[in-house]
Length: 423
Image (spheres, rainbow, N blue to C red):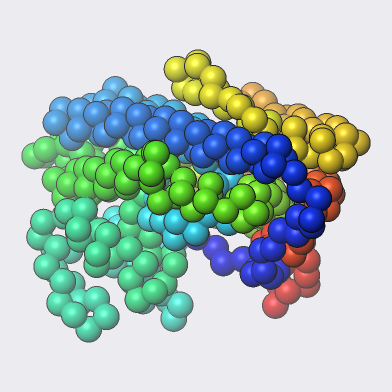
């Protein structure tokens, strides 16, 4: 999980003296909708993770090419609802403190398993970048002898994840599982995802790349932990849950939270760290779902998450709809022109993200879009970046229309200080 610049930590909503009881009630209804949609998204994420868990167990119990492909498909499907939750990160401390366990990125995959020789070894920044826990049932970590003979969720969460406080020591979550299913993507800025063989989970002489039993144990532990982590987050958004209560107990702070999540994900995180930075560096390692070549979907559903929070409407994975009083209605009551502008820009962003998604699904991989000199790829990505930035400006206007002051949108050097990227 890459660090980003925090513009300011002050979150203050100045309502003035003209707020009526009816307006306060409307704000409360908007916050209830926001919490209801959060619950639905995390419930869907849990359901999809449980399906992934079943597919992983089937792969481990009876390895085959078909079982590996089924687990990959389940992982891809699990990303659809989860990416729509990312708008809840910024401003919701309970979510942001937890998110690194399930979606931390980028990761030094050599911590987990075998890697290609071109990957290299330990670095000054991360002495454990090539530890390969799967191949080593015992090792020294921060001067402590670690017994890893049994690979368990407790080992991954308690000993390995962000070891030595190095953020790229990602041992848990979606991307650790993604690497274990796909393996490294060694195609550079060419097309293609990772090509891990199913025999990496096979028994006996069929096993490739050694330690197939431990690899299966790691995959199972990581997947089981993902499920339990999502179970915990679902509970936080149920009636009486801490995350729900934190949002609805203070309507002033609650409205700030919604806008903070929208603006921070839209600007610093997605437009900056996840998109423009990759174009500036022409680096396929800047793909969010790099092993699976799923970055186009990751970006698309991040954008959709912003849009459905503003509209107060979410379509669940079973096709049912959760909807209610929306932030859009509050903004429209304050300034119809600002609401119309923001809705139009949200739609424009989804169009541009959809163009990336469509191109990738037609064979123009996101890796290729990042290649130096690929004008078509740069245009696709930068059109979406520009739309996200414009969308953020409209979110700022919504902040002003609602009387919100000093919102802390996260920034990115790629947008705010491009020269610093190369220093």
